[in-house]
Length: 343
Image (cartoon, rainbow, N blue to C red; front, side, top):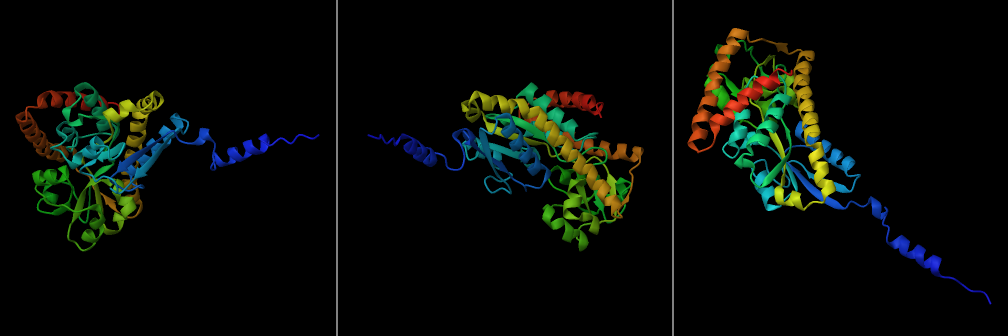
């Protein structure tokens, strides 16, 4: 009498219903959310993509990261609070948005003579590791980055030539954050505008120029509405990527190790990328008919001396808050000299 065996069919059936398009090994073990206040195509957006790519590679895709761009999850001003509340697992933000909330980082965001974008990034890491500043209480920094700076990556781009402080005195020049304070010190008439409104404002002569990183020239086609570009130290926007410390400690060891392993590597990638974008903005402008003007060394030194009063103000105000401002400033100056010598 023949025996009929149903077991292979049963195993095949259960195998099919348990594998919806991928094997168990291919399923991510952990899904993280990553919030970014700006666009996916901006340098911070590209840095977010790179972090996601690096984490995937280091964890053999055991971790999936869902990014949320354009402040769809948290805005530029409440990222750290959202991370502390558990709204997102990972968050990237610019410390320059809230200098009162990030007093140590505020020092780095003034228009210092950084020779390369990586200089404030390296300074940020050293000062964060040495001082463990209270502004980051409850979170762990897993990457630092910055807007495009350096000797050819930032300054003025305008309808008029800039070769001295007299050239900008009384002129309507757009800036944000610390840049507004800097322009006031230099005697200009600062105008705050979001980046999306700069083109029309330049076109209609509402503003005469802009004072910031050159990385925004190419994507927004500002070369079409400016005539001159002038390299000069501009405010930094040192950015941090953070996780909730308690949340981080709850992750499995392989994920914690992966995050720690890539933090310096990712910071270098992000800093170098932004630096190339800043210098690329200058080159793009020149290739499209914009003229470059130069502020001679003696005048530049004079302008930087005027701007140094911003640091003096910061020292007085931060000391009054009971914070070790003098110690922070001394360390910053030491590190600025150290890392500028690398470039």
